[in-house]
Image (cartoon, helix red, strand yellow):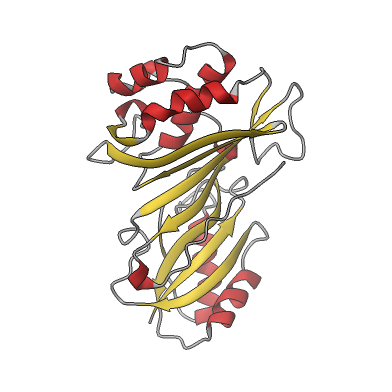
Length: 259
């Protein structure tokens, strides 16, 4: 049987999603918990590997098992064996041709910026902090050129292993709510550090360090060195993975809202 699961996690105490030899990854914790419930070794495949410090409200994984458990047992039993920073939000059987990564047709992230003079304490691992005043309207105006299909080489990490830098951004919205600025971005797929590099570039516009058209210039340069900083991992959340309807996988957008 192939089973899909929704996973929620606080990424701050982990070295990222991927299993690692000398660090603690979310994948390792999940596989250990699932193996206890299944009573045999379980390997999982995720929709998208997140970096150290990145969070998720709607990560999706799949795994294969011969163990017979009802879906409630998979969900609650696995959660009971997970660290407090990780939980399973749903579980369901899926077709054998479902693949958490390769069947996905879209992903959505939310990036949260706390814009105030004083650094955060309670939210220090949950947001990107910017002390200088930010103009969210300027950031939104500058971001519009990123919507559509483009070569996002200027926004990919140097170590990005994707063979093709073309990605289609289907929506990108920025709005302020009190001291918080929310950046919501959806695309067919993302390059390594793409969202954080976009956020870092837009922060420069929001502070007034760069003009609105600069973002278009960065995009067209296709050169990572001309863009803004890589913004903090703490503000980034994976909030949806989309699949074709035929798989029947839950696809509700889970947006964290801090203010």
